[in-house]
Image (cartoon, rainbow, N blue to C red):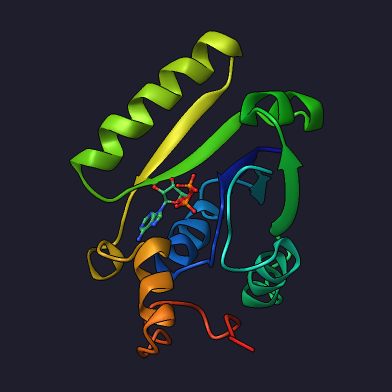
Length: 151
Ligand code: ADP
């Protein structure tokens, strides 16, 4: 079975992530959305909330799983036997950043990173922008799946 992991913070999941994950399942038998746990990072949403938002967004999609992990992404891939990392590209800044990570990962383990170019209508969306809109009481609902709800 061809599996890929889609790693990120997903604080929160956006329609940009949603688009990449949905298109990822056309290429792989299973896409494992992997929420990285970084003890030093401050998040707007708890790990449980971030996980639930993603699980609910893909409740009807058996080919998509959601997990959490600590440490290096390639170590986690080796641990669960996954050979591909899926990433989304929005712009040249993403490309430069992702290129360095993918090269580093290739040095660390024989794992391929597969890039999907963002869809035009979600290319401007970033979790950081969504958090800013939320903080300032703006309408964030057009930027995220319906499962993302603020208490
Ligand atoms: P990180 O915390 O690692 O920056 P993110 O949650 O921001 O993780 O992003 C995870 C992945 O989703 C990355 O590959 C990123 O490029 C991609 N991504 C984020 N926003 C979008 C978007 N609007 N369109 C396509 N891909 C996106």
